[in-house]
Length: 143
Image (spheres, rainbow, N blue to C red):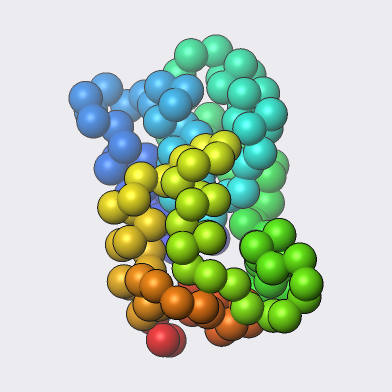
């Protein structure tokens, strides 16, 4: 729809730092993630390779339409958080999550993690209930 395309265009323009109408492969991945797309490291590498070095907005829009809407939902996020509490208690330590997302894979900076927690109204220490965390992360304005 037009609203979604406008959101994509706004994000594209934000990441198109040199304003040449093209995104580098790394910028493309950042835009896709900013728009809620979940890409594994191998999907990111595949996408970078397929884009041939850079993409224009039309190519980005085509790619996003092919991938479909971001599919993160509360149940899948709660399930993913089980890695932080294998005993199944339904909660996890904020410090454990921070260590995970700032130290493994496509890392967030400590500042990015802290900002996400701030926007979602989450504590910077202690434990958090997984379902509450998922609800706040997926809909921070409702928190």
